[in-house]
Image (cartoon, rainbow, N blue to C red; front, side, top):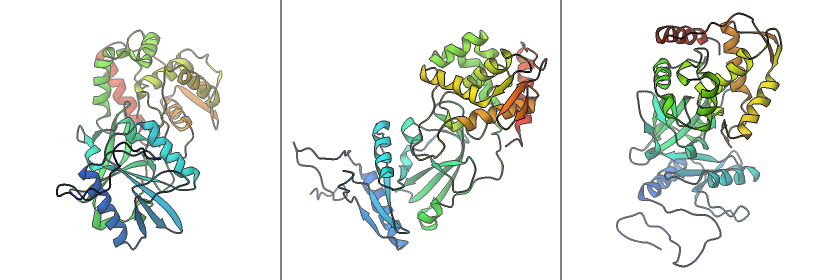
Length: 353
């Protein structure tokens, strides 16, 4: 037992002894967070245990709450963890029939602009689905110093870690565990107003990146600043694909419009197969989201096809099939015309979803 005067009293492993389950060092911030979350549940008259040992799983969640006859593990994660370990813990709970709730420490919330946030790879793995039908997802944070939750929602990524999002702060006294299952979503998808600025910056700076996906798409167009204005568009399910939207949409436009014969059927299954081939080659990356029931990137691909249909490049001939509309593409080469077309296409996607 560690019963000092500087940190909350706690237990520590004896030196030289190994534990049968994985643990990590705890900061005062983490210890305080668990204490407040336990009291938060107690005030709601929810039975909870602090750090109970689950022998069948060989895991010790930060808290275990009893809700509607179900055991709900709550993990308060303040420090970085190996993403593979987080997935392992999540899937272990799920195999035991539990729905774990990962609550990120408020110290992990990184704001880089007005509505722009940086989400590390580990934090993406705690993404949860909103309660209502639709694509909205959210991340949950808690700060024991301010005693408030933060909900990051309407998440629209434009690269592997940077996103546009909305944030709402909720005092611990006005947010319950039941509210977590009632988080709603906006009635319609609203593209972020600052998106065109990000797209402009991307065109100017893309040459600096030399990832496999950047090099692959650069070979298609000769120069990344020349990607078509019809690519790099925000849609609701972008969070499913880790590769920057400017790249994978440019590839799809090139492969299934510019290279595609007019009038030939384009099936969603064919596009998905081609996309998956690039994923297997390590050119494109998708996100593994253990708490999201959507199994693959299909919704994101279909949404972009709907954008191309709105622009007049494709015509739908079935639920998941399209044909190329001939003579509807015109190459643009000047900066002024590219900017104008970027704006036109951005305006046209409003109201699609």
